[in-house]
Length: 253
Image 1 (tube, rainbow, N blue to C red):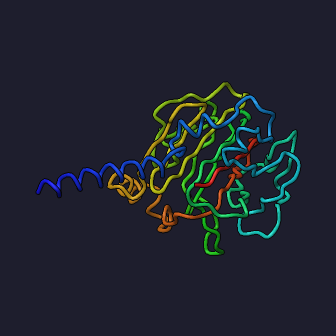
Image 2: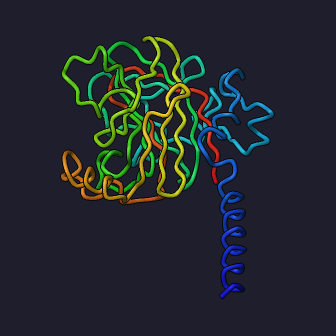
């Protein structure tokens, strides 16, 4: 019995060391510290490059991006002052742009700037298929919106920083209209964290009882494949209002 106890303790210690090593550098604060917030827009610093970050947009070309369910970069998007932005007016939710590559476990860093009353979002774990008209039919959304000037009343899960139609933000650290905001999205297995301007605004466990309850009520009852996929594309949503995105960086685990 004594041998078994010692053996069990040694096993637990070894498991703890392995677990810590496996998750080293994946926690949200470590990932946030890896980012150089003072670097030039759309450029990787030496520190970021050494920590495994890559650029998804260089501020010049649309390489690596195309329209949702399209084989080309749509005309309703353009590159302006080193930023990706949409030039449509009115609803255009089917015309988001997506990363050509799919991702499973990753951290995504990006900056966005809003115009008055603008609405957009960063979606992830999105699946392309002609049977889906909109990216949000499958992928969760980091809500990007000027909710203070939105013309209609909004639910708390619709304001900036929310996990749209699922989790309202714990805080509201968004900046003044016209200033650049920074987001960090971390998807580590079923654990998802959303940061806005250096503060955690959403944290949840996918497939938990709480997640399932929210998933199976409200808006998503009409979309049976929402949240179904663990690997998918990243999408910048086109909602027919002007939002700018730049310094889009990603690190895979």
